[in-house]
Length: 138
Image 1 (spheres, rainbow, N blue to C red):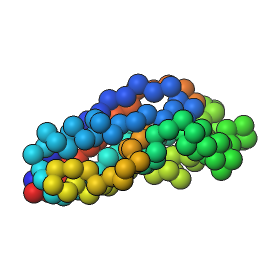
Image 2 (spheres, rainbow, N blue to C red):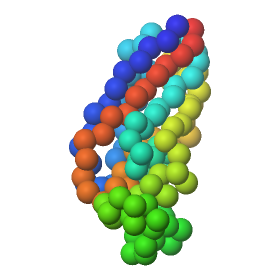
Image 3 (tube, helix red, strand yellow):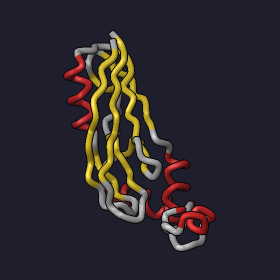
Image 4 (cartoon, helix red, strand yellow):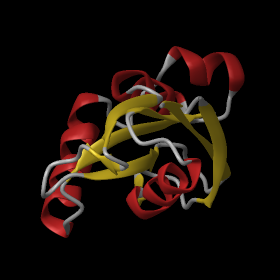
């Protein structure tokens, strides 16, 4: 069986980190599926999905690390071509990846005690985002 739903987010951009764990958990619960996989997929090209401990220290450390890996204040080829100034956001999203798959065991997401599912918007402005959640199993 497969069940699909969408989460709609309004973001602020600039590495905006949004905890979507509860919404994904609710979608998995409504699916009626007991055991399988939950895939969470960001449809935008400048966003990413991952799990972290959703705590201010971890979030700030992650933002600093991402800025070191793909700095926002340098020139990117994408910017030269399109002139939109968000080349850094595309590089960050490519490194983070747009999706995450989580086992569903006895109707519960197999997340660790301190793991939350987060959407990260790397763009240089706020956006309306869609995250597709697909639950597959029995």
